[in-house]
Length: 196
Image (cartoon, rainbow, N blue to C red; front, side, top):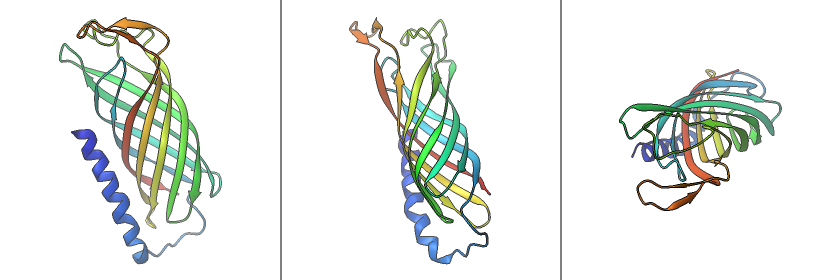
């Protein structure tokens, strides 16, 4: 439910913000070089980890020119375990984003390598991951709307691709053998921040 709310908010923001373009007078030259802020994100894991939730994160970007940028972000999620205690899953990604940046907006494609860390608790019987940190890719589309007062709004939609490894485990609920492998997890983020 929360995942859908973040997605709807992001799509509405992306639709409304371009309509305000004619009312904005920019007072700085060139494209924004740095952007940094916070983001609210949601993810739904499909694989040996079959849960999802909302989380929070930090974002940083640097525009080398109008077509090439560097991006990094860190997110944390609370995923409920079978013992009803909150477990924290964290992820960190960094790499290039390719697209177009103007003084008013940016649209990019991204494929960011990084890592995701799942918690390891004795009562977390449905995710027998060893090790608990895995290589991952953050893929998708990023939309940024830059405002002349140095604030921005950001929408990010795509998938987090996780390499769980080549092992097999028996699902304790269904009793079936599950291959770990490489799985995608739909993810969205909506952020705000400052740019210079």
